[in-house]
Every structure is written in C-alpha cells, then in structure tokens.
Image 1: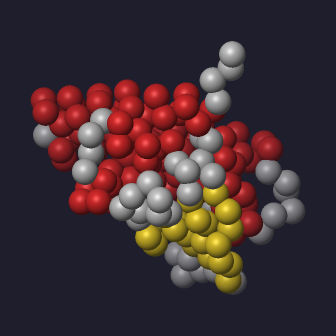
Image 2 (image 1 turned 45 degrees about the horizontal axis):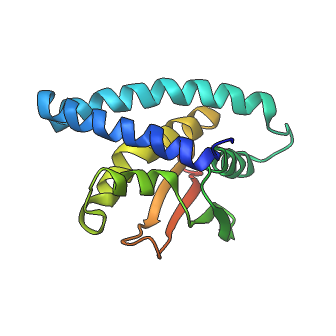
Length: 162
C-alpha cells in the first residue's frame, strides 16, 4: 500500500523538528536557526530553478510566485485554496498541513509557539524560493492556527518598491 504524500512529508518534518531541537540544545537557538536559514537558502535556489523549468513563461511575477507557492505546498500534501487576491498579493487558506501536524507530533504547544516554528522552519524555504524567482516576492503568515480545526492564512506579496 502506498503512503500518501501528506504522511511522508509529516514524518520527514517530524525528523527535521527533532533534529532542530537537538541542534538547539547543543548550539543554541540563534546558531541553529542561522544554519537552517543557510540550508533553506540553498534549497530555495534549487526549487526556483525547478519552478522556472515548469512554470508557464507568460505568468506575471505575482502569478509565478502564487503558482510556485501552490505547487510547493500542494506537493507537500497541504490542503490549500485561494482565499483572496488583489493587485499585489494572493492570500491562501491552508487547512490540513503536514508541517503543522508534525509539530503537534513532537509535542510543541502550538497555540503558544507554532507561529515561531512555522516562521523559522517552514516559511524560510518558501521565502527563499520566491525570492529566487523574483527578488520582489515574499511570503508572510497572516493568521496562524492555534488548533487542528482552524486554518492558516499565508500571503504571497509582490513588493513593487522592492
């Protein structure tokens, strides 16, 4: 029987979270997060290169960023839908999320600390990928769930001034 993508990503994220907890114990939070950010930067280069090969060439920078976000989260098994759109951003509702469930599995008090975890463990990879597609793109957490029943809102933004 084949394991759904969601479960595989959840299990891999559990390992990443447990590993990060050990790195934090040994080296401290600042150094651990700096190392993770360096790894996310490298992953972002690789993911952006892959996206450029597969995204339709006629997409605007915002559309390319939104489609990259959709693919990265969808490929991970997250259930996402477009929530809102305007001229400079696309906001997504994230319902079932393997990253969130992995944090629950390792015993994180999600109501208190999840925003910090998502901001430090999940969003940097997305951010670096978007930035390598177009330096004006960024992703930001708008609403972070505090229970399984809730949802997250994450917005892909094209900063025209940037």
